[in-house]
Image 1: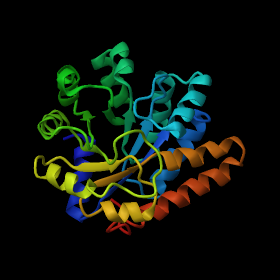
Image 2 (image 1 turned 90 degrees about the vertical axis):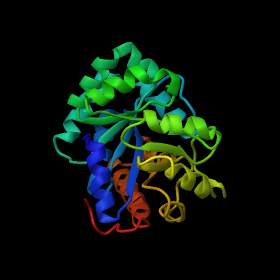
Image 3 (image 1 turned 60 degrees about the vertical axis):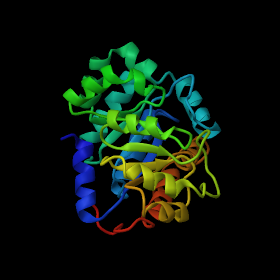
Length: 272
């Protein structure tokens, strides 16, 4: 059983839902990323998602694209990110997953990437540009090493294909709430709950919803059908303020914002 499998087994037994924040690694630097990850764990996040900067972002909106650009300008490398996560996991029990381009994984070597990531405290990877038809090799390595391969289903994914993606995934399914790019939105699509309810009938995997989630009202709306919610752009935007504000203040602001979202989840008072 992978670390993520164990997490969701515990959450389900407790009647709780996961809150999963996304942060860009290395913006403004890896020391601040580490501090934010530790703060998020202490605030009660179930799992943290770390974006590995890439020059051709996939489905990322302007906030995350800009954060990737800044991190790349600072010469952030995969090796440095894994060194940072190893340090964070030595002090935190909160699991970590990476959002990483398949180009990076392939260039590093499938088994080498998974082996090094797991040794660095990473429990799984979200690979948004990996087509299900081309995922067998990486999926085999991940299953053998108890490393979760989390794949995405979108509102425009044909239902037959969505089932194939679920069958090829481990850990949890990432359901993209809106077609298009990441970013904060005032309202979520009206058909979202129906689509996720259908998908739940097709798989036993936990389903976590991301893209556009930024308000406690969104979290409360999604909680009845989701096993977890993912928030990215709103957190990355707040983290970017570290360039002009004291880091301690930004850290506190990010923590308070995340805590307000976690409070909208059922069973939020009990931490796994």
